[in-house]
Amino acid sequence: MRGPLLTRRGLLGAAGASIASISLPPLLQAGQPSLRLVAAPGKASLVGDQGPPTRVWAYNGRVPGPLIRARQGDRLVVEVENRLDEPTTVHWHGLRIPARMDGVPWVSQRPIAPGERFTYAFDLEDAGTFWYHPHINSSSQVGRGLRGVLIVEEDQAPAVDRELLWVLDDWRLDQEAEIAPFGAMMDASHAGRLGNVATVNGSVGPDEPMRAGERVRLRLANVANARTFALRFGDLPVWLLALDGHPVPPHQPDGGRIVLGAGMRADLVLDVAAEPGASVAVVDDAYGPGQAFELKHLRVEEGLGQVERPAPAPLPSNPVAEPDLAAAEHRRIIFEGGAMGAMMGARMGEHFRTMRELAEAGRLWAINGQVPEELFRMAPLLSLAQGSSQRVELINRTAFPHPIHLHGHAFRVLTRNGAPEPHTPFRDTVLLGTEETVEIAFVADNPGQWMFHCHVLEHQEAGMMAVVDVS
Ligand code: C2O
Ligand code: CU
Image (cartoon, rainbow, N blue to C red; front, side, top):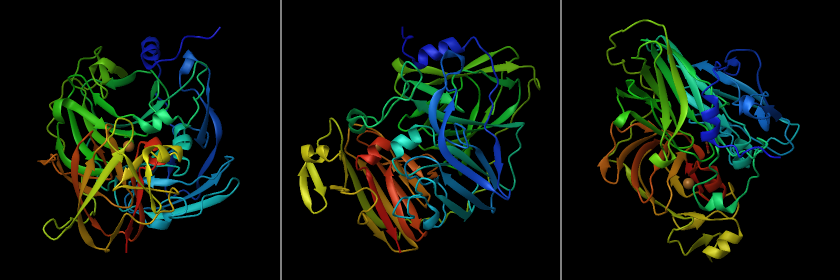
């Protein structure tokens, strides 16, 4: 007899009773002689005692992969060994590094063949919360567990009592807690591969112990294939310090809600303004109140007592060049396709193809009317002069939201449907809502060929990707 289908709701309900502490994967410190990542099949206890271990693909046997911690200005050297039976690469999401270290197959490097190694080496210019993952066969490789976080510490860390990292993830598991097959057309044409089990730091359930009165720096990283997370922390005061690693003026987000599309990160300050014994539900309602669920439970223990907390100080800014908005070149990028969209067809290679012909080729999304014939080996969508300022309108003509990511740069988010974006943050990924238009601006100062794509990995692989050339 099979057990009941695993659901987040069911799992979380059952998990509420058991209390365990979070064990973060071991730390890899930059500066160690040999920082090594081995990508290989492994097992992970994603659902804890509510099911068997899950067969995953993992870095150093861990899901999420080892937390890499380094300091701004360090040089990071990581040797990656591929013990999978297919080629892989490692992309350092959000880092502004040389293109040949960016981990994009054929664009920045030859894929790392099974049994081969590749050494990544680059300087860490920016502080912040970043992450790493394969950039080939991404839906399956990332979706099976290959992803980890890279924290780059600023010189002057903010004054907090404690730091916490939550790696937010989403899995589609079957009744035996095995990862469900990849490649469903339905995922590629709709909202991507949404799962049925949400994990924090690689497991469901366990409560997070907090001390009454403490101030915590909480780093959030959404490493899911497709899922957007939108978290609220009950009545606890929450301050946003950084988005995608880049500081914003500390402010309390609208409705206390932190929205992270796939690939995005946020650094928060959370004040545990609650009495010992209190318990605070961390609720995700990204897909509406009807699908809201409790991601985590904060269990407040004895602590510091009531402490008056001023607004946190801003983080020191990263050395990102400020785009010259007046002199900037204007561009428009239109995203089309997918289910329930109006796209009739698009160019693939030289020729216009109907939606049906595209679908037969596994292509469902177009950027400026163009669909890649071969993923990665594409003519550039944009060719930008190195050092030029760019203003780019991103127009979503589809029925789904898309977290749009640009490699090698950070861009300011200027407006959303014409309205100024609060604090015009520097980001590397922007969540483009359904039928929304977002304007971004950046200085094209990192030479090379850079991917520009949707971070819903099933969309990316179904053609929602392009190359931007900076030279
Ligand atoms: Cu996080 Cu092109 O990717
Ligand atoms: Cu998308």
